[in-house]
Length: 405
Image (cartoon, rainbow, N blue to C red; front, side):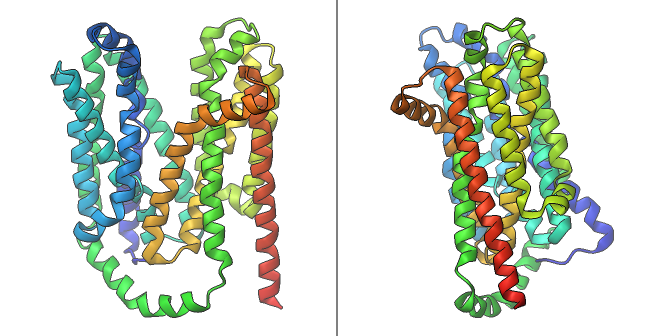
């Protein structure tokens, strides 16, 4: 870990956290889908809708390429180049009427975002540790959620001008880029490389004698993130159909309910460091159980007010994300942290993408294919996740006792 001069810590934190505002903004222009369907009437509705999701595919690819790029040009340069790509790919569609060009530009946007996504977490691990790192990971998750909500809101205002104007929202990459350039030290890459070289021999000797449970713990955590995202996405993909099936009144309040849940989840993430101090490694267990109860409530909800309450309960399980990331940063060797974070983020995106197919497959297998039953499936999956993390927490406790003995 690179040492940071105390008076510069605040600026460095601000600079690193600033890039998280753009991590979940690919879908911000979903408000323009109706306008794009009309403008590109010679293309299928599905292909137009795919303009929103194309970045997800390129993000997964370039998240994996992140470690290779960082190896050759360093982390600071990678972030700068990535943000420039995101800027070009983000605002480009506002200035072209070519459907193919928009597809290419959306791919470029995802590529840029994917390249710097792992660094939003790993850079924090490079400069901070312990409780300070846990607090920052919680704030990082919150910044990402707030950024997504703000970008979607702004795009919603811009689309009132014309659908192309919604892409102007990506001009907000510019202040993020400027902030990072001004606050992240130019010599950080050299300092980090020196620190890595000094510890390399020590790490290799430790790795030979290191208990194999640590890498296993990281792998299990990453796989559980895949299951988690496959489950939590039902809150967004099945809620509309579920409230229709339950014949609730004021169904138009759905978007507001989900926004409230997302914002409160972000606020909770800010307090992650303090919550972890209280519950330690049982933190994910507690909030996964709360989430499972939220899904149970969704199956029997009678009005949109209670729907919002249950949505907040479900969203609280997002604390699992900073918990797993902190586990990776604490347990993985320094030389592989960036790659490990990259793989974890790929599994996040993959889990979210395959969520409808996973839930549909399970539903067909058990003969329950309606939206409300999907929430029942999610209840079971959340409880399985809670059980896995409970076992891991017990295992950690036993390991500590064994070390003391």
